[in-house]
Length: 194
Image (tube, rainbow, N blue to C red; front, side, top):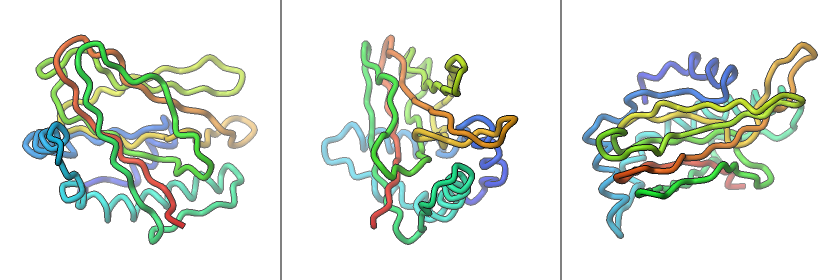
């Protein structure tokens, strides 16, 4: 986490609605997290603790800038941010349909990570995003995640600079059907604990 270039990450998020973080976890750590997910008593809090400080320091800055660009008064505070970990374990035939978090006051960014190796542990199961801009066709995106890779993605809406200024674009994400094997990943979402 301490080697991440947050200026570049913010630029990628502004341009695409996501920022890839290749090799955020080495293979051993990724597989250790995957083992915890597949056991009934798997606690993910300690392995993810290292992410806590860095994410809480940088993500609210980006989220607050986005809210300002979109004319929203709400501001996020580092002190009040809490995360929720949502592991996912998909086997042949499983998928996660396009979705987004739609609660009121949703934090606009979340983390996704892949804890198994495409082509080796599973086939299919691509991480897919769609972006819908006003009066335009939806734009599909496939994030090329590998074992240990993560991405910061837009939870629902983000600002996009058009000719007349900034406007909202809507993003959803999904995981395509797993064609074989077992795909293990996680999503880390945030909320304001006010």
